[in-house]
Image (cartoon, rainbow, N blue to C red; front, side, top):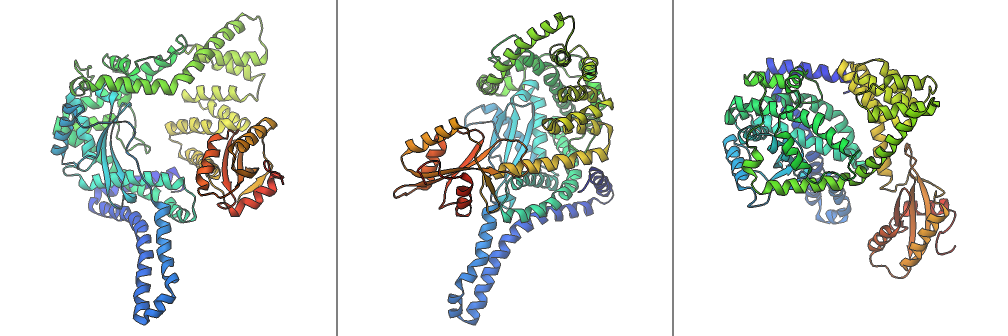
Length: 616
């Protein structure tokens, strides 16, 4: 699909077809869904079938000829094996806390009761994570050729937000995605769609020749399957809502939708900003974040009536298969209204002692993840506040000080409009990338078209501003419905992603096409590397060269360390692993021997300028 406009046109045509001729639409969708499996499974079966057919022909002609041509017979078998190895992927269960046997029996009983009522397949596990969300996750087995394992993912904040009946409506909705009741075809397409997204993400990260053949096919296939299945995926949300209404009642299902949408606003606009602002005064992150979150969600949010009205005004787009809140409430036949927090949450009713354990678990996990950044923000805030006070006390400010003053005002005084300050500073520093970026972002957030020029100027001046700038522009053009501009941005982002993946692959692998140059290590790094090689005791010689990564604009060096071991070596992988653990080097590196990298060893030696260790 070459453009967003073409994609939108196809979706709109398919929506009409699904209404006017639903059987024809579903038949075409089923064929398209099956095509992907045919290509994958058919490639393997074709290779194996060629071998089997060749064996039968040779046996019919002459068994002796079969023995003579045995190597030829194995060629298609080897090809089939190469395909399997190249495409075989293992998909792990969703991340989170996996409910153990005997834990939260009331929650498990409630879920099993709803699963049986919905006619959904058995679950491989129940996962509780730290998001305000729930999901029906299907993990494909053997690329989806052998079906899927099903997991129910529940967010602890979701359990803290809803009462047990509203929570039951959410679970019933997720079981509706698994194809319970009358939506089995829609459920199958939903699982196939989710499986293909995971498969395509994995394929994109691989670069073998066999995988490239399939990637070309899926570059064509994926957008069409996405468009065809998008129509059904959106209707599948209605099917899932129908399941929620059937099992919990339309009123309760509507209450859950309103509570989740407003709860998400409450966290995004009130809770998390408050947590981030706490780093200004407190050097340590909160100890019990998810306990605090439960208390926050147990209270009505700020100005909920205005927020609900804004949510009901949202328009459907092509980025999300979920209908808008207004569409879903209309489907349920329920008028929108504010829903107060429950006196007793689903977490209180169903988790028992596990609730406190999960709150502590996720709070500790969050603290570990943000601790260093939190301390840095706290220290930086102190420096920024002191600098803002110093700048304000000056009778006049230099050009650079004026730009810094604008940044500090924007960061420390969110109620003050910093746009005039940035404009004044840019009048004297017309090529300042940060000034253009921040002014552009402020204006784009207000849907002011003047922000486009500032954002593009920042991207022209500073390469690091390109990717975030493109995302800012894409959000702006999405709100305006400008498909042509979004197509151009999408093409640039896709090219950047391809270059990033190629660079990441280049840091993992060595190929015949690789080019090498002199290393970029300073004297201290060379001494440290020599010390590691000498202390290891088994390295006879070593060379180091820099691998030249085409299209990698990061500037982060990548080196190849080529070693030769002394004596008899029973396990090169073990020795290489020991060295890799001991070596500390700026950037990234890969370590190898000539025996397992014959295609590049001589070029690494030539580019290195001579052995780093072991003499000539």
